[in-house]
Length: 564
Image (cartoon, rainbow, N blue to C red; front, side, top):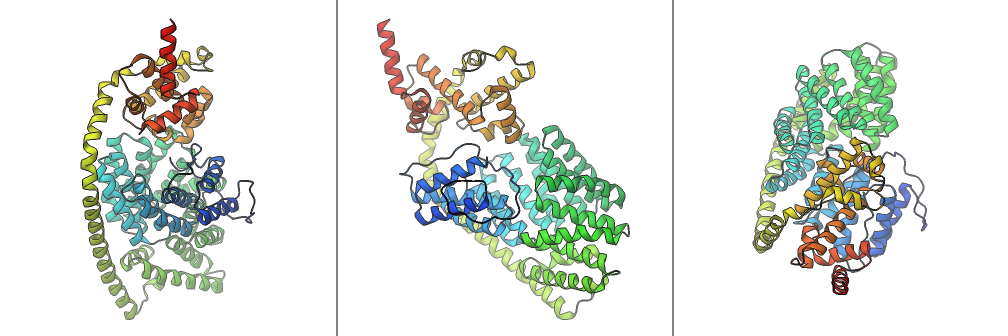
């Protein structure tokens, strides 16, 4: 399950109605109704709404017997994802932190920690962001999965970048690139290359930043990620500004800004507005810079991104000083308010670097009391960082002790399952035969070679993932080197089916094949070979697809053979 970006900005009126529409108000109403009752029925209504918005890949439904805490875990986590997508960061924090304790030691804990880290970056609370990101990385590192590790390292790099500590960010981003290449994940590589461009821009090495941005842009284009390619162009513009090529930066941003506005990516739009304002300001075109800085300031203030809003307010101060000094003073006051706030919530060292970057005389005229406050803030930050590190170590130790016993109990079962999968790894279904037998696939011969190759590759990928014990649309798309959206569009076009339906059909065909040809396997073993965690879930899925249970299928087949 993964997230899809949606783009809206203003919440409309809440309507208390049983009809589910596409407004934000309906989602919050459904969420409130679930929190009042805690019932599976209300959770199912909420997930039906998310499914209708294509926020989830398939319809998620819960049994009425599901424990309340399990329901809350899922509802609260997806509420956090939804509010983050809507750029309502405070609400995303609220629900993410409610979901996290219910995920301890379970699947999804790493995703929840990573989400909270990213949200706190947006809120400029870098201490909290680092706390969650490091806990996330500890889990991912323990898993040994280079792809997950590269994702966590990218988040850590983003935190240090947001706190204006690019020297620290460089270490994480280079390690993240190494892991992404090891995982052979081009999508992750593109993201990390873009972040590397930002890191070297912040380090003042724009000759190195520019090729990183260009590599990232080309890779996104090859992957068909048009929306992300726009972000890479924005990163390229930063490098061009650093190289004093303001005119080319302006040309790049002239295409980026309307594209981001059309996509509805308001946060990236605000940052691009800041860059355009700077490119124009450096060309002595103050009046033209004002509307860009103004839009950025309004958007960032609404989203609570104080660090980037400081850039906007400073730009407005400089752009308005000659023509509207009174208005410029208002912006300077707002800048100072933000600066004081961030001294409290971030680190003085970060903002000292920010001040040095711009080098304005009026930023340097600070009295001794303020400098003393900075020093005290640094000491406090160090103490807090040490305390957080000790806390993280303590949490890790407690969790390790708690799960040590469970891991031992699982070792035998895991070994048995792995042995079973290895033993029957050769039981894969003949792909060409499956293609001929699939319902509705009589027109296979009309497919062009590229579509046939895509369909065969998809079936091969699903089959391999089944043998490894886990298969879903997101994982298949990743193995195919495509985004989930791109994979869904291509598969629907070629096969006429949604990814989840297609995968379910392959799992059921494998189950049917094993039932027909391998009587030595019991139902539980067949369930494992079809990537189901237990026999009851497999039996329900089988009955939903074929209309009878696996046991009934075997009895029917046995009766048919007896008659023959």
